[in-house]
Length: 259
Image (cartoon, rainbow, N blue to C red):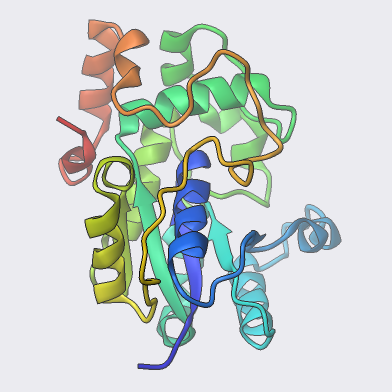
C-alpha cells in the first residue's frame, strides 16, 4: 500500500490538535506541526469575493501540498461538502481522519473558546443557555463568503450536527472516524484501529501525548478552564438545555453522545 499524506478534520479545535499530536508522535514519517487547509496567506489573497470557488481552491492546495516533501497533517474544520467534488482524487492521495467528540462537551468548549478568543469574530454570548440558542444567521463567521459551513446552521447545536452529518456519509468509505473519548481512554487500540484502516504505520512503542502539550492550540489559553474534559458538560447544562440539544440533534448523530 502506498504511503499517503494525512487530512484530519473535525468540528472542534482541541480535539483536532490532540489527534494530530498523537499521529505525529506515534506513527512513522509524520513531522510535528500541522498545516491549515486554505491557510491564512491564501485566505488573505482571496479576500471576501463572492466569486471565489472555495471547493476548487481547497483542491488546488491539496494538490500542491501533495507534491511537497513534507508529511505533516493537514487540518480542516470545513464541512465535507467542500471536498466532495474531488473526493475520489483526494482519497487517492490522502488518508482522511475525522475526530468527533460528545456534542455536549464540544458545545462547552465552543462556548469558552468563542467568548474568549480574538482569533476570529465568533458569536459572543456570556450566558450558556442563550449561547446554545443564538441565531447564527447573523454572525459574520457564518455569513461571510469564507465560512466553514456550506450548509448554514441555525444555532451552534445545529452547526455541530450539520458538520458531523456531512462527514458521516463517508464514514468507513474513505473517512476514518475517531472518537475523542477513545483517544483519551483507549489510546493504543484507537491508534491500532487507525493503522488498520489507513496507510499509517505505528512506531514500536506508543507514547501518550497529554492535552496540555504545547502544540495543542498554542494561540489560545484560558486560565482555570480544564481542556479536553469528557463529561464536563454536566457543570453547564440545565434540563431545558439538554432537551434543546436532544430536539436539535439528528438521530444519526446521537450515537456520539458518551454514556
